[in-house]
Length: 61
Figure 1 (spheres, rainbow, N blue to C red):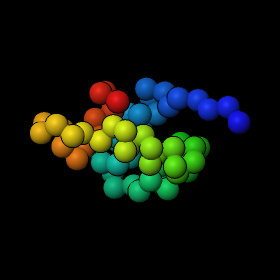
Figure 2 (tube, rainbow, N blue to C red; figure 1 turned 120 degrees about the vertical axis):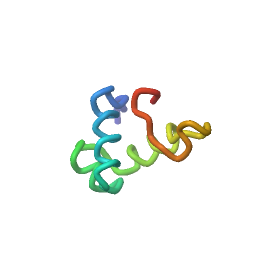
Figure 3 (cartoon, rainbow, N blue to C red; figure 1 turned 45 degrees about the horizontal axis):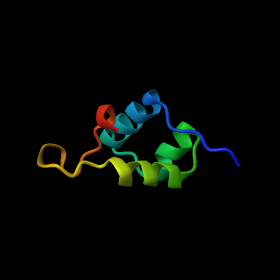
Figure 4 (cartoon, one colour; figure 1 turned 90 degrees about the vertical axis):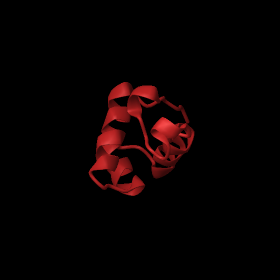
């Protein structure tokens, strides 16, 4: 199986869909990726610094 990175556009879509209240499974369906892809993306890039704590800043991902 070949893996591809998420595009910048997909990362911005993830951010917008999270703000709209969608869950990981819904976001995965919309983007056409597996829900674990979304889970890993969020785990890797959810803000840990005070300024972005608990948020997904797509421009920094």
